[in-house]
Length: 71
Image (tube, rainbow, N blue to C red; front, side):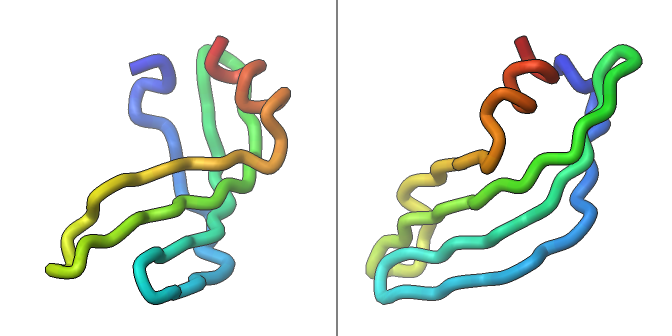
């Protein structure tokens, strides 16, 4: 809601697949009320044995930039 749906994926940079986990490295552009930031993030998905997503975690390369945009 804070970004009014203005989070754009600029590039999926890499995928890493493990036995129970999947990770995607992504570059995002986030815009909020006159402020634009480019952030990189890792989406970590924990998968069940049935192939369903159990958990999603998100890690940012520059937390200060994310806080500037969302706080």
